[in-house]
Amino acid sequence: MNHLTDVADAQEYEALLQFLYMAPVGLVQLAADGTILMLNPLSAQLLLPLCPDGALTNLFDALAPVAPDLRLLCQDFAPPHGQICDATRLYLRADAAGNGPQVLSLNMLKLDPARLMAVLSDITQQDLRERQLRKTDAWLNAIMTNITDYALVGLDSRGCIDTWNDSIGRVTGFSAAAVKGQPYALFYPDGATTPAQQLERLRDADQNGWTLDEGWRRRADGSQFWGSSLISPLPGRIGEGGVEEAAYCMIIRDISDKRDISENLRQATYCDHLTGLANRRAFFEAAELELARRQQSRRPLALLMVDADHFKRINDAHGHPAGDAVLRQLAATMLRICREVDVVARIGGEEFALLLPGVDHDAALAVAERLRAEVAQPPAAEQQAIPYTVSIGVAAMDDSVAGIDALIKQADQALYAAKRHGRNQVVGWRDMERP
Ligand SMILES: Nc1nc2c(ncn2[C@@H]2O[C@H](COP(=O)(O)OP(=O)(O)OP(=O)(O)O)[C@@H](O)[C@H]2O)c(=O)[nH]1
Image (cartoon, rainbow, N blue to C red; front, side, top):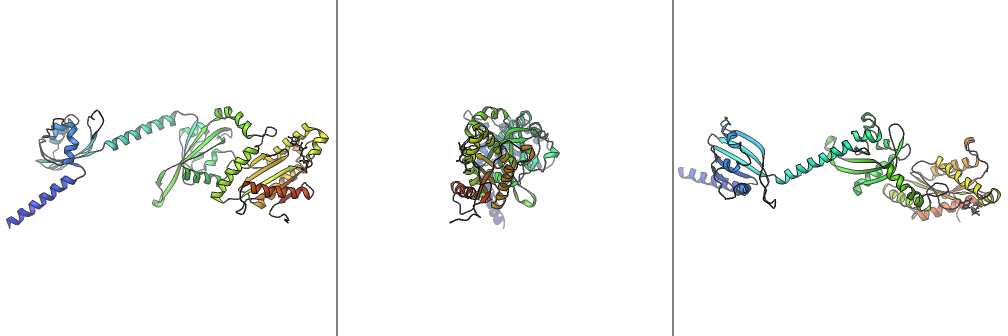
């Protein structure tokens, strides 16, 4: 019987040794005075930097340089057993090359009045990450409290503002109560962006890691500044019902200065000098961008080609400068009728193109008709000396249209039909008679 008990004890002891050997933490069993009774290989490895001569007989002595109070702490621990300390950090001296463990976590347990157990783990990397995070936090805090031209905005998965900080107040003048829960379009002038575009930008940020746009931004008092808005996704977080929700960080920057410098260059590259509208190049770049967006969202897109009627006669009758004034006035009328998101461009002498995102063929016909009517019979405030009319061709993007050139061709055909049928009218490519 005794023999059997001995065998069981031996097996249990063997299992304990196995466990000590395999344990992913350093385990040291010691007497109440610190004498080491048993330790596993990992603890020997972790404690090595503290015992350059390799002598490891007393844990309190070994840890004295980094935990001078440990001996006292253990001696003063009155209960017969229990936890003496939990996750105490021990900062070891790293060797010159910075190799080996540099930060240990120590848990000290009292097993009984005569025996203690130390549990050691190498938390060098964790400590490093925590210090980096604290540093980043300090940087961010410094940035957020000192910058005057950046607003840092937290957005939820729908693009609504869910955090407010001082920088938002400083840059935009909005209070927390005014912004929380509002779509981020709050910072854009009325009509400068649509809900569909806002969602598209979030998807863009999801796919590409970030998305950036420049344009007019709005302050709480209604004044505007030229700003850039960068949106980038934040790591997922758990929302209601345990569902992972997307969230975004938006950085609005007041770049009025930068705009002043680059505006001349931009004007020269993208603006039509006579009317101030987008030029041909700007139109094609914007159109390609809109087509790429449409590929993702399948939202409608319409094009109006607008041409002044018998414009040569105006030039001939009133002179070239008067003709120029008519073109400028036509540009102003188009801008008045269009939304901020529309692209209004002069793509030829007296030929203009209007790209209307989110607008289908029927709605585009209505916009075109309104423009035609306002040119033919301007409101009293817009009356001008030389009466004139325009013809307009309308086309809308669908899956049968190969690209922007094909769309322009359709709108052009509709425009020529309008000219053929007597001018001062609107023709939609979808409705026109084709051979
Ligand atoms: N004043 C002015 N005229 C321009 C400008 N660019 C082109 N034109 C004139 O626009 C006129 C266009 O004439 P046409 O292409 O024959 O067309 P139209 O007289 O408008 O006749 P329809 O388009 O058939 O109704 C020409 O006389 C050009 O000189 C410009 O920047 N300023």
